[in-house]
Amino acid sequence: MRLVGDQCSLRPFRREDEPSVASLANNRAIARNLGDEFPHPYTLEDAREWISARLADPEPATHLAIEVGGDAVGGIGLGTHGHQPARVAEVGYWLGEPYWGRGIASEALRLFRDYAFARFELHRLFACVVGWNRASARVLEKTGFRL
Figure 1 (spheres, rainbow, N blue to C red):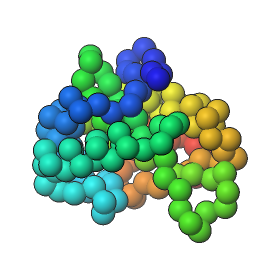
Figure 2: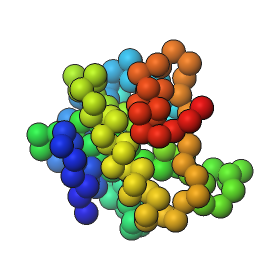
Figure 3: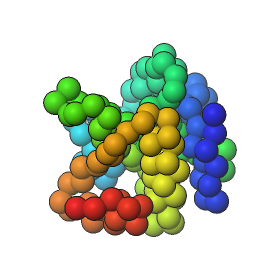
């Protein structure tokens, strides 16, 4: 399964993604904008554990790699919470800092949003953004999310 855009593609994670994921995710500027489950420092072992868990996930995939130039440069996925109504999910994403400001996150979110609504029969998709992360809030706005 591959979702192709002009600047990036979304695809399942692979073992060979471990070094690039570890390298790009080991960034305080990324970790401070994500939940507590995203560690800092982010090690190769963290990448191995994350990717191993994604390889064990059932189909259809709920977490995909953001790929640019053949490399995994970020991730995007769905989360559900026990307190949420059925057919409602949270989307989360991260992108390596060298790829910021190029429209890649917006394209990845558009691709993933369409995939998620088609594959999971969702009624609503939401996202949470920390107050200081205006760039991520703008990505959400550009892809049709409303405050």
